[in-house]
Image (cartoon, rainbow over all chains, first blue to last red; front, side, top):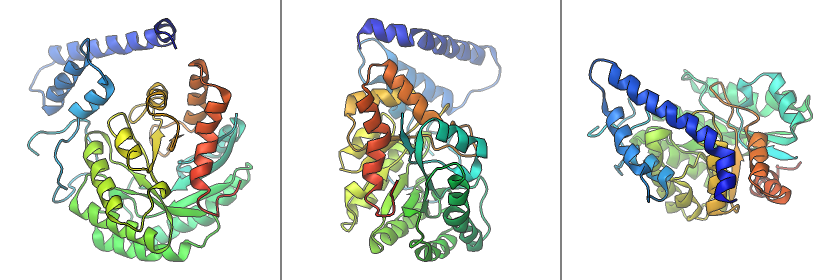
Length: 88
Length: 266
């Protein structure tokens, strides 16, 4: 597909998600209290979106991933939270 | 359009979903054993679940003209209790001769713990001893990359397992190449909120090719869409993929992998 065709197909959807993203960050700033590791990881992942970057989706997923290699001693929860709590 | 739904938890769905899937062109449904949303209290609970997957659900699907196949295991979310897992794994062989059983799955990891690894090894050994296909669940979100690497290590270290008889499911952009490079198959799960969107799944096909890869909806009791595969096929058409290329991805590929079990006949 050409870039024009991709824009015709996906621009409005991407625009909508971009505004949602911006609104989420505004909402976080307006709210009170401390943030946690998720927002730090989110900001780190955002830096992967810059011009000239390649494989952005992969880079964002890696930025949000547990980088360690050894199994953890025991599972204390079943759920994942979407970002790796550093130093766990 | 014709397609195979290679991963759907139909015990959690209503009969209307069977009607919609059959209407959309579904030719067969495959149902891996999974977590019920709560921990079962004993191996007997799994015995009943395996009966449901191999007796009751195929009958329910057949009312809508859909062949139903299943995979058996204890899901990684319940694998922290190794004693329970050993009891459940010991139950599985008596179900392996049931006419709709395709193999061992969906095994894998959830939080990447030591006990989950032990139970994964038990399942891989079970599959090797009984010459079964393997369907693997990879962990969610931040745990997926590490878990996929650990899973691939376990499977590759067992020389009895042939990679072409293993599908690693729920791949995303950071794991798809890792999986395909091993010679195993990769499954892309189309979810509304997590895992893959239709657009991203098609991106991966365009980047990594359409060999040894399939798409599934993995619909269950959570936020999921039983029609995710045919909807993604429509998106592929909008992106200029040919009818033959779409058919290969959503019908021929799953048929090729699943037909390695002589029970998969549609």
